[in-house]
Amino acid sequence: MTVAKLFPTQEIGSLAKPAWLVKGVRGERPAPEDLAELDRWAARLSIAGTEELRALLTAGGERSEADRERIRDWGALFAIRFLEAAGLDVVYDGEARRVEMYEYPVRRIDGFRFYGHVRSFDNRYYRKAAVVDRVRLREPFHVDELRFVRQHARRPVKIPITGPYTLADWSFNEYYLQQLQDIPDLRARNYEAKRRFTLDLAREVIRPTLLALEAAGATWIQIDEPAAATHPEEVPILVEAFNAAVDGVRAKKSIHICYSDYRLLYPHLLDMTVDHLALEFKNTGDYDIVQLFKTFGDRREIGLGVVDVHSDVIETPEEIRDKVLQAARTLEAPERIWVNPDCGLRTRTWDVAFTKLQHMVAGAELARQAVGAAA
Image 1 (cartoon, rainbow, N blue to C red):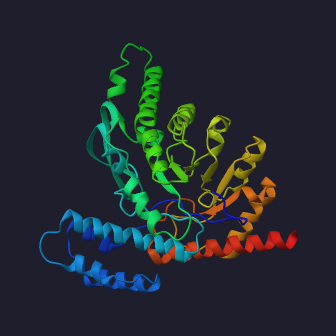
Image 2: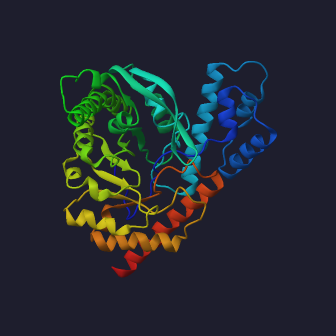
Image 3: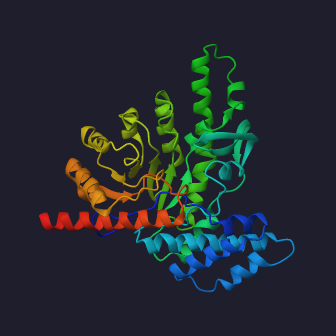
């Protein structure tokens, strides 16, 4: 996928789910203030026909699965229009249908058993599972979701999917460790068990899903690996699994890695079959990391994180312009830079997220003008 301008803008992942969506899918009736919020954003995003949605949300009696799916459709449509109205060049649906990035795919894979909630960061929790048998994909996931987005989006689409290394790292590894009891060294046994678990996920689960998404029209797939640098000694597993997952996939491939010491990923990352790396910079403020690309001769695209997703402080367009131009000067290749938030904006309200994205788009335009004026 190409966008014919410098510094195109993209989203990275999830948006906060509106209260009417969460309650609607749970089978609860939204409060009057939830419906008022629905009306406010429908007007702001010029979304018509919401009488059907209101009727679904306020109807008495038990809500059918078909009704819940229609509510999810509306949630996805609102998120698509939200990202388009903010001015992004590439959009998705804010992951409106997904519980979160771990549980959603794991519930579609045989071999896991959920144990309970664990804390991830701040006061955020996720439901953690153990792998208790060899993993097997029930059926490719996100396919219908992608079809809906492609049918309704007015901008190019990029679909995000959780990567095999993060799925393995965020799980208890019981089955694969049990298969390797003959390895006496505990460290060596843990490493090989992690490798086999991750590669099985890559080959048996993620790759067939990516191929199904491509067959459904995906032209750009973002593989999310927030755990990539959690264990620096396992970066070779991350790379081997990524390459196994994308084997034969012709769509544009990108990886998103949450904030960490990206120096730990090199030089192994050079062997990854990926077209684009979307990284967090605003969170750490360390834009000198861009120098890594030049130091290692990495000529792939970079998704430059310029918006802090953990703060309500609104970045100014001028601040974003300056960071984009700083990266452009370092790389000496402005055509390889995309502009994006550090990560998904699900921890921010829609009002805050919308303004942040609008300023990001404005900052990219200012950077574009500056490069044009200097040419």
